[in-house]
Amino acid sequence: MMTAWLQELKTRADQAPAVARDPLHIESSESAIGSVEPLLATRMAAAGLPIEATPAGWCVAGAAPNAAFASIAEWLRVQGLASAWRDELLSVNDVSGASVAVIERAAVRPLGIATHAVHLVGWAEQGGVWVQQRALDKSTDPGQWDTLMGGLMSADETLDVTLARETWEEAGLHVEQLRELTPRRRLTVRRPVSNGYMIEHIHVFEAVVPAGAAPLNQDGEVAAFERLGIDALQDRLRAGAFTLEAALILAESLALSKRG
Image 1 (cartoon, rainbow, N blue to C red):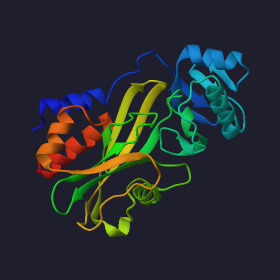
Image 2: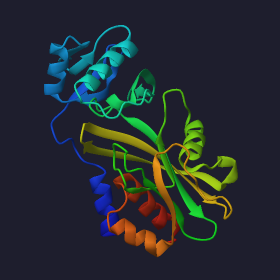
Image 3: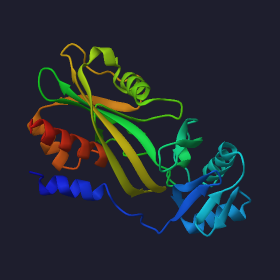
Image 4: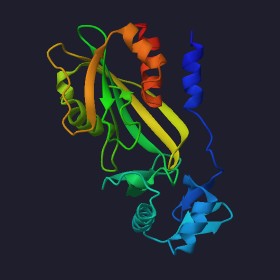
């Protein structure tokens, strides 16, 4: 049975924008590819960026959407409205899931563009679950606890490629080392964030980490790893030590695995 606490997590992970937003389109797609606050869109249009008002909302104009998004992203950076710049392109998808453009990762939240991420729940062979503490200099949720691995899928990647890359970069593990690696489910998180609106489709994988394969960070984005017993994990989850996404993923994994 779903606990009231897990239901509260689900509610927090499905919130409307804090400020009303208009649909965002591109000329080559009839469906919305994101959303934008009207005041921000008006500022961008006044600055000469390739965005214009339409009866359906706002449209990123021009025959070259990648170039249009690049100019918008750079303006957001200069204005201090983007997140940390990563020189990493993410896919811009229509409602069918088809990629219609690419955009710098730092600009997706102000434009309400949905992202895809992978998370790995790492059950420890000797018992409990491996979790990571996010680096203290992360722009989002610094110092909070997270799943063994979590990362965004770049525009040129498949889920399997992202899973392998992020598992190595964050945890120093090759997917071939893991046992019982299994895709479990997809969660979607919708919530306001400090620089816009987050829509993230999270593809959850689970695996068993062998006893001789302790995680070791490679990219500087993890402060520490810890293997928690189930009771300790539940205590830390309820204490609010985990990111919202990780708390939801781990709470559901505990419920579905009946380990909690």
